[in-house]
Amino acid sequence: MDLSVIPNLITLMRLLLVAPVAVTILSHEFMLTLILFAVASVSDGVDGYLARRFDWTSRFGAILDPVADKLMLIVSFFLLTYIDIFPVWLAAVVIGRDLIIVAGATAYHILFGQYDFMPSRIGKLSTLLQFLLVLSALVGLAIFDVVAWVLDVGVWLVFAVSSLSGLDYCYTWGRKAVAASREQSSR
Image (tube, rainbow, N blue to C red; front, side, top):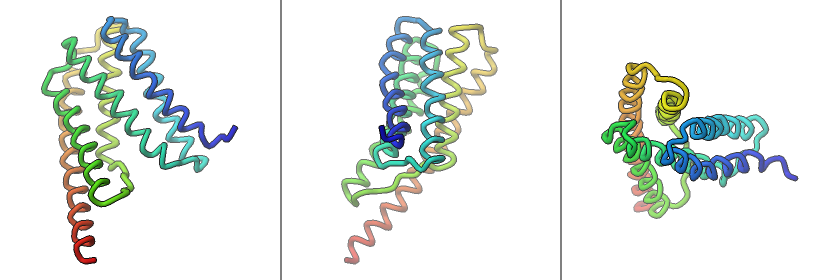
């Protein structure tokens, strides 16, 4: 077996965990949800580490990894909002940000061709905070009550950083689109 596919296999496993996470949230099996979500969260770091450490990066992995993250987070935020754990406005910001990023990346690809999408630092921070907030909520549901102010701080941090990240992506990729458009029109 070619070891360089290990990061992609880990990412595929994370993608396959989305459905069981959704089912366990809806069935209120929060301990199992916590375990599955924690495995998915850790695997996100492991596949990235292996890809960078051993130069096992691939175009497939570069696309699939953020898709797996976004799908896991969108489903988790949507369902945790559905069962009244997170406020609707927070889910709207988190999901809206991701949909804007995906729509922008798709439009850029259609209009200008292949792009090398590199997550920004604030984008990575946003994703990390979102994972930590979901984990905190699941710990509170599965094991013990998390102090209310911890979740409140997490909610506001995720709101602020996700909003800033969304604006950052719009600004950065808007500038790149303008530059690519000018380059195309000058040919």
